Length: 109
Length: 112
Image (cartoon, rainbow over all chains, first blue to last red):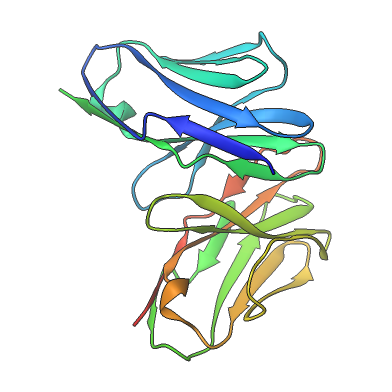
C-alpha cells in the first residue's frame, strides 16, 4: 500500500529561523512528488512538482528537493505569512495521489 | 474567476438526512475528484472521474454516490448521514497530462 509520512507534525519558528519539513514516501511507481500549502479554511494550493531524484525547485523562501525515498521543503528566513499547513503528495503511475497528513508551520514575529 | 467552486461551503444537518454537495470547474480539466479531510487534516481521496467516467473509487460507504453530468461538474450525494461523516469535503480537478490538483475551497459538513 502506498504511504506518505510527513514530519514534524507541527513546527514553530521565529521569524528568520530557517528549517526543513520532511516527506517520506513508499509508493509503487512514483510519477511525481507534489507540495501544497493549505491556509485555514481554504483548499490546498499547489506549490511544486518534483519528478526525479536530485531535482530541486525554488519559489521565494521555499526550496523543495527530492531523493528516492523522501522530499524536503526548506524554508529560508521564514516570515509570519509563511504560516500554514504544508502537504506533500505522491502521484503514481496508477494515477492516484496519496497525501501525507501535513506539517503545520507557525512563524512568530 | 473561481477555478473550482463548490457549494454549499457550510452544511449542518441531522443524522439520517440526505444531502448533496455540488462542484463545478471552469479550467477545462478532464479529471475531477472528491477528497475528504478529517479533523486531523488527513486528506484522503474518495472518487476520481475522467471525462464523466469513474476511474478511482476508494473504500467509501455506498451511502456516498458521485454523479458527473458533464466533465465540468462532479456532485457528491450522501444518503443517511452519520456522525462520522462530519469532515471537510474538497472537490478538485486536474489536467490529465499534468497531474497537478487544483482544489476548491471545501465544504464543511457537520452532522449532529
